Image 1 (cartoon, rainbow, N blue to C red):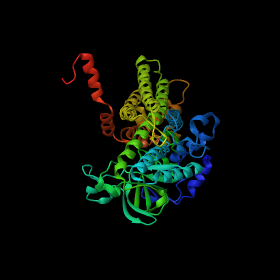
Image 2 (image 1 turned 135 degrees about the vertical axis):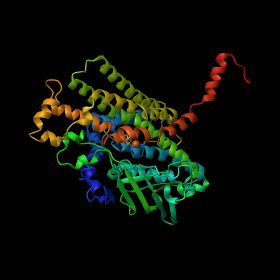
Image 3 (image 1 turned 90 degrees about the vertical axis):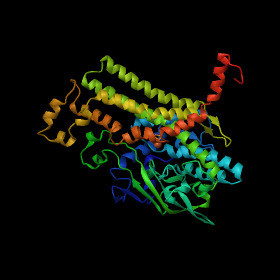
Image 4 (image 1 turned 120 degrees about the vertical axis):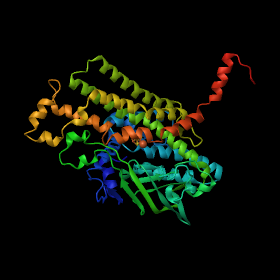
Length: 484
Ligand code: SF4
Ligand code: FE
């Protein structure tokens, strides 16, 4: 397993083509806008070295028998699935943001079982290829970006019906030694902090979409890959020389990027699907379900920090004992633990796949994510209710550091005795960061759209819920005879 500094060093060796705010980034490691997100991924390495977290953060590889970081593990039991969720909650608590490394873990587990079943049906040898590749990922302890979401253009049309054929990533050339692909993947979580990118199709496909049914993995600095870093609310505060308080969470963050694949060559040994359109839907469904399970972990961990910050803001205001405040904190906890329960439940009910790894319960994973599209919004609403308007009207740190203004800010923005105005500002800015600022990308809008928008889960719930069986139950109890 790599240590944090080894991870950073290994990323430095990548020659990525990255743009932030219109400019090419020479050094992604020290760029002030990127750095907090690198620190979040860094925690996945740092904590894996600590004895206290060993059980959650590490696992024994089913491929090599060696000790590995759990983020590269192929799940071997429901216990592994549960530990995954617990690890994600823990990291959410430590970073209060998206730590980005789950996407590759979820993609790998979906790819492991799908390639196996595809080989059985088509006589291909993708599973062996993938397993060899993933052994290398485990040995090197790489971060792999899981890239699924295509830009999609006209949502009413299939990939092959688009007026611009590049709206879904596709094979544009087949050579003896590999394929050439073109297209883009949007909202790529953690791409700039990754060593590799694993590309998957984004929808179930038909024969006409054959060239779009493609999955592979390559290094992020492969020629032709271009990353355009996503803007976040309040991101330029990170460029200000002295905005520690204003940042709310100075150390950690997440990121997404628009990733362009401009005629990128993929060698044969890195291709895990090419044309087997009938397995595209399986890969999408499995990846999505694993990632919907993930949200029952990470969002709860970030929620823990938000609940803590909200309780502190109430204390600093002198209202912690008010019964309605206490009740609102109870409600926040109830919602947060409900999400966690769903994450744990879909893990407990997981099953072994034909390939031997463990897969979550699809229905419960989709219920988990459906709740995630709602509860973090309500938790954020309650946080804002309790924090008060000051969280969005506070003066800046520059004002606070101005000797003429500071006495006024100190005096008039003070809460209870014994707590400094600065600490009150810090906790309010942290709430702002998670509900409206840079980390809100991961906590709010990503709760809605990450791992699939709400309607995608409703389609899965409709498919999995077995209403026919429920009708039978009702008929029997009501004394309705068969055939009526
Ligand atoms: Fe992991 Fe959550 Fe970030 Fe997805 S949103 S990569 S599950 S931390
Ligand atoms: Fe996500």
